[in-house]
Image (cartoon, rainbow, N blue to C red):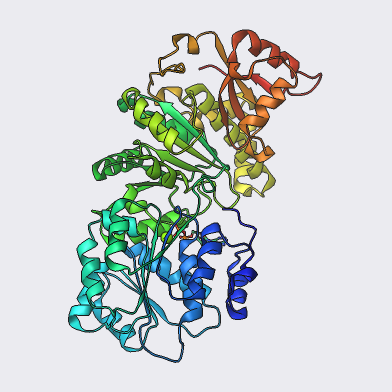
Length: 533
Ligand code: ADP
Ligand code: MG
């Protein structure tokens, strides 16, 4: 998403530039730098392709804002979007970008009381952002007139086609004037989109933002090879080893989404489901609580998660393999945004290996095989967190009732014993390794995809007291080790970087050398053997 251009170079007005500053955008994204000048130049039709999360809304929203005539009360632009969530999101984005201009925009979608929408339409709206079904309703009721619009924008066009909106779109187009300008924005460009453009757009310019620019290098991409029946256990371990997991879990089908979310709930996680069969109102509530981080796990289908814009995600989990390379790229584009570190983890079953390699090759993604977090490592992580939480507690003022109680307990008991009893009372369940099920581990595969059975033998797991908080990543850890011990980089594997610490797998014979090389007199060693269960 890098471009040398600044917003000042694109032909936008002072008012709009002010609004951009207010909004906090510093630099245009590539698709914005490419689209905005063309939209402002003349009235060419455009089809623009750029991946999810690259700011397509502002790419058309900003020039649109420039071109709206505030003094007219007529609807001048219609933006069609596939879902209610997007209608609201796009409408809000435009609202925040319009700055001091007196532009009115409103979302129009099914599920919302129609008379409320009627009132807003009657009062005059310049930009309508709507879902196809409800727009057609209004056209039939003659409560919305599109015979004089300047701009028709099809946003997330690929998704609208995927959702079967083609006939609705054609119907809506019939109600519009021939001299309007049509703009089509899409994350992908399947043939059906080009057919649509050929049929309805009388000449158009194609703008494409290159793909490589988007797979964020702030996203660490790894995969686990697990049996289908072990996936859920692997998911729990993945969540548990993190100090603070905030992630999207993708499943292919609605019933998988329901099953995973329900099971997570049963195991005490704050997880919710979102997919097409869940009522709009419920979806919106769920999304709201996810955004506010009231829940930290959102289980979703691709369609339901499409266009959902949440920042700071620590993880994207591909619980089921994405259908194709593009969908892989979309899914993982949800993390590693805006300078934040993120991890994308794909679960593959052994017989999905080939399909997965295909995805990896086409998506030009560098996805490393990793070991599923080991129970012993999770327990270590949890203990560490308890330590930290206790330290925080000690820094705060503790209620005097507890002090008095503590004194009484200490008077009557041996301090170590009473503390041990208290810890066991509080954390026995949480720290019980038997709460985790067994997972069959699959070894590394060779170049041809054949499994190298020797892989898991003769290796040891190390614990490093360095993590993301120390600005550490897998590469830095490898370099650190290489700076002290001669190890071939391919003898180091399974690196997992957590918030405050990391795990590394190395050959047995090297493990000991590494541990020793990091020992310093009188100090806690930076790298030690990970505890075994
Ligand atoms: P897309 O439609 O391409 O998936 P969005 O328009 O939903 O992407 O934008 C994704 C996020 O990026 C939004 O939160 C938006 O406010 C933000 N964004 C857009 N343009 C910029 C920019 N130039 N600088 C920083 N953030 C931006
Ligand atoms: Mg979008």
